[in-house]
Image 1 (tube, rainbow, N blue to C red):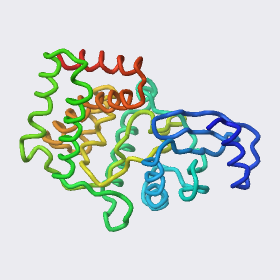
Image 2 (cartoon, one colour):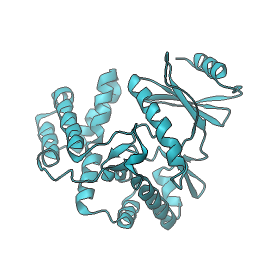
Image 3 (cartoon, one colour):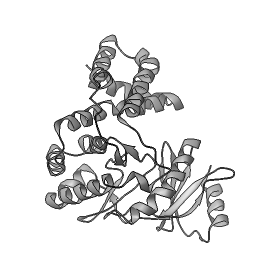
Length: 287
């Protein structure tokens, strides 16, 4: 929908008068608007995202009372009736913690803050939630069997045989060794990248975008750190968390295959230019 239609929905269904509007993000799942430099409105792009909003409306108020870092606290929403569906919350002060920004922060503070956050998150009891999915080792493995199937069916025909062989080798151990996905399910963000960790000045201020949260492999939430930050921060964090080697093996696997999620999405929406970018990245990574 265009901005005028979205503005009409906001003013009709909330008590807000719009003085300013910024288009923050036009992503896979949501169109995100900032209203009056204060409120974030996330309008869903597909049915699956509406289900994520339903989950977040149950999850976020509880996390607000359990975590030392701020998370969004929904104040407006529409999840039933006719689309578009949306959720809105007060903006958390800060900007994404880029790799360069992370280098300027005190490293001991950064590692301690992120370690505490991950420990608090993963210690959250399953019993508190009914809307958050729980993935056992077996059901988690099944997702990667399905991902491999999708890659072979939709992406592999556009790649060189040597690249396909390397991809098959990358999936071999995770899919065929019975104890590779050996973990106790814990609450994870599941998209903990530099885009979703906020900082203001020299402080970490919050973590946003919880639509993918689930009870799954705690090693997964280290993936974004491997992909987005330098090795010194990653080592400091994994040492502080006392992450065993088999968990790090899984994290490295998740990081290596992350490109396939983007490639499949670009294939789905027919974005040939960005699909080719992903194919080039795959060819470079799997040689």
